[in-house]
Amino acid sequence: MKNCPVRRLIQSKQGYHHGDLRNALVSAGLKLLEQEGHSEFTLRDLARRVGVSAAAPYAHFADKRALLAAIAAAGFIRLRAALEAAIRSDSNLADRFLHLGSAYVRFGMDHPALYKLMFASEELAAQHGEYLELQAAGEAAFGALTALLEQMQRRGLLRAGDPEADGLSVWAHVHGLTSLIITGCLACVGEPAPQPAEVVSLSLQLLLNGLRGPARAEQIA
Image (cartoon, rainbow, N blue to C red; front, side, top):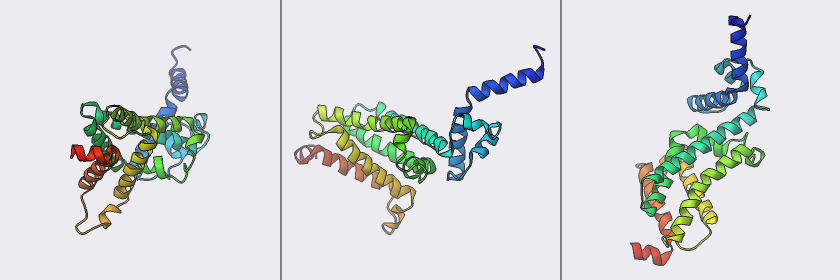
C-alpha cells in the first residue's frame, strides 16, 4: 500500500539513518558533553537520545573514539569561527591580534569540557593525524592565526619571521592561559586572585610587544 502509515514511518527512519544521523549524533554528543562536563557517555546513550537503535551509530563511527574525534573537529570549527568573528570588524591589525587572543581564551572558558576534549583528552591523545577531519579542522583554526601574523609581518607591524613558527608560540601561549583559567590554577596565584580578563589582556599585550621586536616596541610605546 503506497500510503500505508507503517511504510511511511519505515521510509522516514531509513532516510534519517542515511541522512543526518551522523550530524545528529555529533550534536547530541556536544550537548551532552557540555551538560555533563565529561565524555563518559556511550554510543548507546547517544543513540537513545536521537531515537535510533543501539547499532545505528556504528554505520557512521567505528567506535566511541571516532565519535569523539568528530565532536572535537566540530569544536575546532567553532573555535575558528569565534577567532574569525573576533577580528572581522576591526581594521587595526594590532587590535585584531588582541581580539583574536581574547576570543581564544573566552572560547575555552565558555566551553571547558569541549576544550579539554579538543586538547587534553586521554582518548584522543596524539590521535589527530589518525582522523583527517579532526586534523583539517585544527589546521584551519590555526590558519586563522597564522594568516593574521603574516599580514602583520607584511605591513611591518611585527618583526620578520616565520608565521607558522610564531603562530605556534602564540598558540602555546594562549593555550596555557586558557588551561590555567579553566582548571582553576590561576585563582591560586595570588591573594586576592587575579581577574582572568586582566591577566589575559596584559599577557597578550606583552606577547604582542615581543613579536614586534625591541625597536618596534619602543617606537610604538
